[in-house]
Length: 433
Image 1: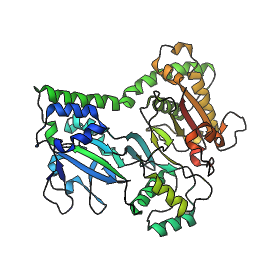
Image 2: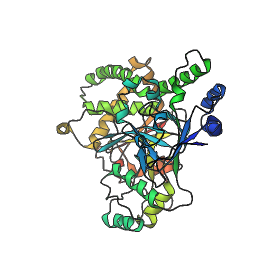
Image 3: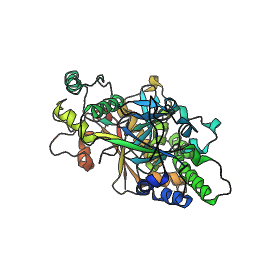
Image 4: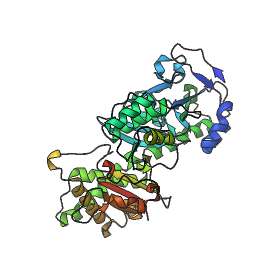
């Protein structure tokens, strides 16, 4: 390991390809094979950092470096910063546990992608000319899931005060699901454990991006990055396609004398994006890759003293049509649309919105003139379930109390399912047929 000079703020430890090659091989065999053929020398530096749960890796387009005291420093405060400042977000590979790419929009957190070990970020920035990095300033990447939340109510002031006193937290009482992740991060930080959760990231230095136009190996490396960028741009590439599909659907709804609000149109488009995996929905956790679940759940069971409800934790999840038992959820009470039209004066109840979305999706799935449209067939492959914790007097929306009977991941034989959760007031489940 090559160690740079120690800064008063942060220390950057530089690695060679030989020192990290086996770790890369485990998480991304294809990238490993490409770099192996390059046989890069020691001057091709790599930087590896471990981030605790909840720490921002990228903060509004700026790279954060973790410090030994548990805090972080922007890259500009480090020695050796030139090696990583070739772009606002240098190319990075996730080595251990998951990271979340998200955008902060006023009082909302909009999850864009959950990065698993082997995934890359900073790809667009690495490929674009430096003067074209227009989106980097709004990009955030966290260690673990920033938008994680618990279905059960955790906003009891007395219980939260007990939690903060026992663990020494400074987090205020969560005002909604969007605040849960901040409290979870502090719980993980304050809880002593012999095996703390961390997110390990490998950053590529500037040397990897010096032009070598006549070198076939380096052209293959660049080609791979373009392939990854193409996959990650799926959302933006299909916006136009879905816009054209909606024009076809408009004819059908006009014939039925239906005039949906633009907000519902935007929601349906978002649900279709979720089916393709272009954007995440939410799902209950199945492991600890995105969040140190055990520590957080034990804190709410043993310190907060959560009564009878199950401490189910939810994180962003990308739906896959190739996984037979896969499912993902979206909530109108916790909207994560990247952009939408909203007019409070026209807002009916959430149940009315869910009913209308259900009707529109049924129309979309029953249009003979769309038989040759790829999006039509994508929608036909998915099953939509509509749920509410309120009473639907028309009987069109299923009670959320039935969800543990439908989704085995929600069943807890020892505790009750929190079916009155805010998230379940107007909830849509997407699953495979």
